[in-house]
Image 1 (cartoon, helix red, strand yellow):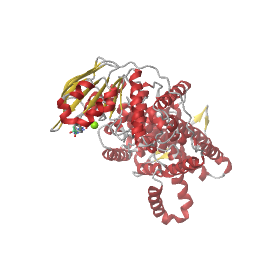
Image 2 (cartoon, rainbow, N blue to C red; image 1 turned 30 degrees about the horizontal axis):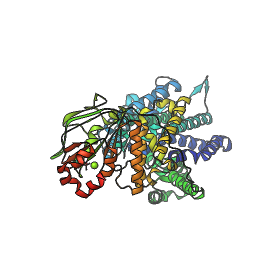
Image 3 (cartoon, rainbow, N blue to C red; image 1 turned 90 degrees about the horizontal axis):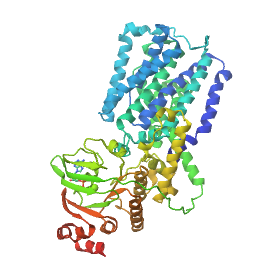
Image 4 (spheres, protein in one colour; image 1 turned 120 degrees about the horizontal axis):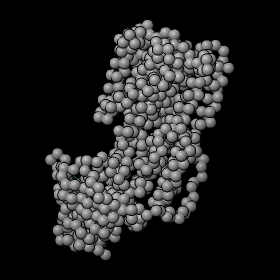
Amino acid sequence: MAALQSRRGSLLPICLAFVLVAGALPLLVQGEFVLFLSTQIAIYFLVALGLNLLCGYGGQISLGHGALFAIGAYATAISMVDYQLSFWIAAPIAIVLTAGAGALMALPAFRLSTWYFALITLGFANVIGGLLTELRGLTHGFAGIVGVPKPAVFGHTLIQAQLYWFLLAVCLLSFLAIRNLIQSRFGRALLGLHDHSVLVRGVGASLVNLKMQAFVISAALAGLAGSFMAVHKTVITPDDFPTDLSTFFLLVIVLGGMARLHGALVGTLIFFIVPEVLSALHDWRLLIYGTSLLLLILFAPSGVAGGIENLMRRRRAARSEPVIDEPLAKATLQPIQGAALEVSGVSKRFGGIAALTDVSLVLKPGDVHAVVGPNGSGKTTLLNLISGYYPLDGGHITIGGRDVIGKEAGHIARMGVRRTFQTPKLIPDLDVLENVMLGAFSDEHSSLLSIACGLPGARREAAAREAQAMHYLQFVGLHQRAHDPAGEVPHGQQRLVEIARALVGRPGLLLLDEPAAGLSLDELDGLAKLVHEIAGLGTTVIIVEHHLELVANLAHSVTVLDGGRILASGTPESVFNNENVMAAYMGKRALDGAKS
Ligand code: ADP
Ligand code: MG
């Protein structure tokens, strides 16, 4: 898995060496300052780690993480000082509180666009900042909370170095848990949440759940960091949480690398160590920051970690031998149970445009049905209605005998409907195989907790899914490309990847939107064979296609749309001999081609 796994593999030895060095620090360096600074860095790293999950991977820009961090710190400090609770009770309280605040923050994200949402989170941060001084009875106002004790284990109170080691262990475990999540179906879907939400719904994921999970996990990490902040500083005041703290965390992950596994670590280190190194140049610091950030955005838009990974990938690619095509036997795949489809009297308007009017269609399980018609005649709209992307204006649709009215696209996908898109939608940051695996999203049952902990059951399921995805990639003939970044695959092959992604969901109903568009003649041949084999698996197929020869060879029945209405329907023979159809759309020559 080139994309996500290179993020896993490439820097891992460096990371381990780093943890060892970081752990040895209190033994190597005398003096409070280095220990204090290292603890602070580790705490900020936890916040950045969670923020990278939400903003980097999930594309949800939060300017409120400084406030979540503050909530965690204050909840811990108040519980320990004013209520005499131990750290082991106070920290979970803080985490639950911040996770709850994160869930609240997620609510506007369901309705608002990214930047409006970012503004709301900024407002949230300001309100919390204000409350820290206003709610004097609880937070002690400007004086803050004094005398937060260090955690105690069996009556022994940890000293600063021990707290630091404990924190390092928590950082390492959190990092591994986030890494496991990122490399699971959760991480793959999360990467599509912002720019590819249509696709993510199409594989059966719920956008609401995904967002909520990302917010809660991200906020809980900020809360955990806050708990450590309280026991580390022992005195916390509103000054520890300035209003620009949230912006600072965002800068850290932009600098380190958004959606890069090591982005949070690299970003936090640079942000803290460079100023210390530059302390002699104090007056120039802002200028140096500004210039470096500009250069970074110009030359390494994926941050420092992203830049290093790209460099390593290029060097590896240059060194590796070209792949020799090893002919693999066509995978023998399990038959699929096709679903019946009934579309009856369906209409859809977009403002003044009647995209579909009174369209009906009945398919038996295993039928291959073609939809043809000129551009703008409503073909894609028909697929969008069947797969639940738009509500119907009239009529009804049943799939496998079950009504789909009012059901969300993710729900319909979970009923066994998969589709490809007229313009292929792949997540460019994932490799080809990972894109295919996304298609099985709704079939995976391991809980997020078991995935994060890397439990054997979750690992087994992930391995089985990967093998299955490889199987379908082999079926469409693209196994050699499994580990290429999807963004680098030629257009025609992207269509095949989409077909593999659809098939891995083992759909009872498969909708193909112009799969032949832009294919070369060779590729077209391959596609015809492929659709034949897909039909042979037993799934019901609707194929939107201009290529009449392909249609005549493949389809049991055809519907011709014109201006959103059915112009003709029936067997390919009867439809292509229909005078109206011939005269209006196909042109004599195309028809002769189809018949010969
Ligand atoms: P086809 O796939 O046959 O080329 P479409 O189904 O994409 O046609 O479009 C049918 C008509 O509906 C067109 O006039 C198109 O402009 C309109 N249409 C499709 N989707 C939308 C949308 N989301 N908003 C507004 N108009 C749309
Ligand atoms: Mg279309």
